[in-house]
Length: 55
Image (cartoon, rainbow, N blue to C red; front, side, top):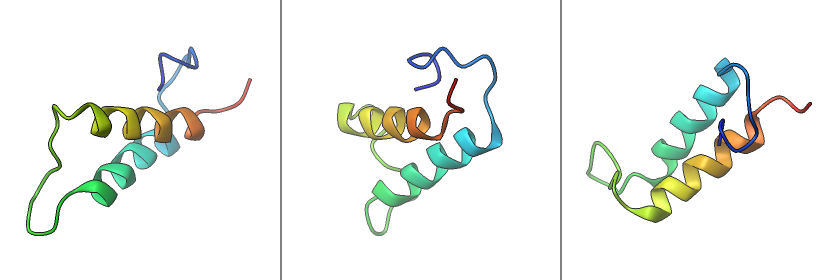
């Protein structure tokens, strides 16, 4: 997401958005979501993109 919006910096809000999205999609009873799943990637990209500062 940061590269998509050409962010110059990674903000705390962007990092928190990624962390929250990962926490939201982790399956019950697991520590982490499936990191190689394209849907996981797309979800985190979109969360970071939305959290990035607007130019």
